[in-house]
Length: 448
Image (cartoon, rainbow, N blue to C red; front, side, top):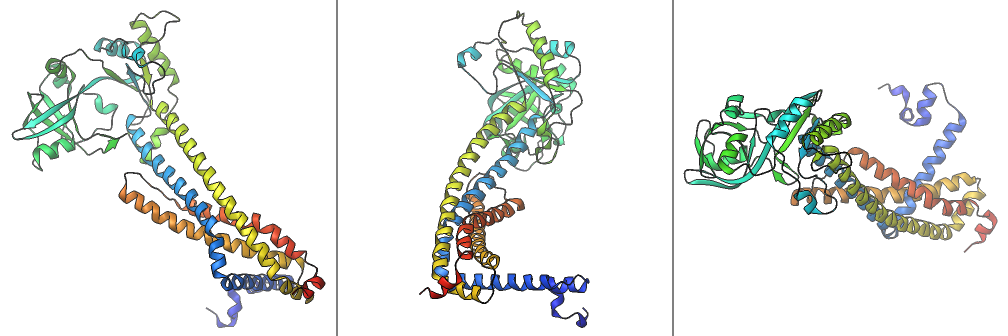
């Protein structure tokens, strides 16, 4: 650094002077602003207890706002990641809708979906990458003296990985021969492998599913959970084998992968969850299902075509209502805090009437007095905002560690909170500052 620049180079006025933009008004305004800021900070330091109590309402409001946004952001991130597992280009033809309206028995009395329905869709609907019938039941799985109860056993075909995020960590998934010849082969989830094999390789091992012997041909990567259901507590077997062992009097689910989509579950943070427009293939599938079931025009569908947007829309409605309620509560707290700021600034103006008169008498303009008291109000609110953000961050960290609720506090939330606190200070501090600026200096000098 060049010593000739002097210490004032780092100041705004000195910086502009070095650029050849020096102007007396700039130096004067910088000096006035710096002096006003010092007076404001000094006034607040002289009344620490009062300033602390005044910021309490702002702290409560900011804590509420930040916690609400942090929780919603965490839930959004977790939810979109889970919804992405359904696949944005996958439709599910099922007996029940994901969101039921009306009488449950109306849905329960619908006819079951069958392999015939799946075959008809694959043959008649154009533009489908995969049609995957599958059915799930819960059974006990045993190997020697180890057992796992209530394991989800899914009977499916070799195309199931095309509609779900399935990647074997060992071995392979079911192949066409397994499904065609109804072999007693299975692919197990990571949780089942850990509980039954305790670190040993399961490939080629025998285990019993519901009392029937199966050979393990693959182990899946860990997938976590979706909507509270553990995705690793599962076993996949050929669908025909499941029917042979446990009966076929049950309704299938038919996963339909529409051409042109990325792999199911791809995308960081659930980017795929945004999905594309599936209205045309959904109408094609609905028309094909109505034809195979012999439904006449005007008759109600006795099946459902589900997609992830139904869950996403319902989730957004719920979270928007919760968010609006939280913002309303936070708004009330900030209103109370703002009124407290206004009240204490009014008291400060009265207490410092003589000071205001002296400053005006020696030439301080109205805008300087206005700026000084506005600065005090903004500093008070920024102090409350900073405390509120810190407290909210600590509470969010505790919630994330002690509960299953996900929390996510991005940087923009902190900036928003501090900016909002500044706006509250400017709004509620304007009237006291304006009154201070309008004080008659003669009357102020007489004030005792």
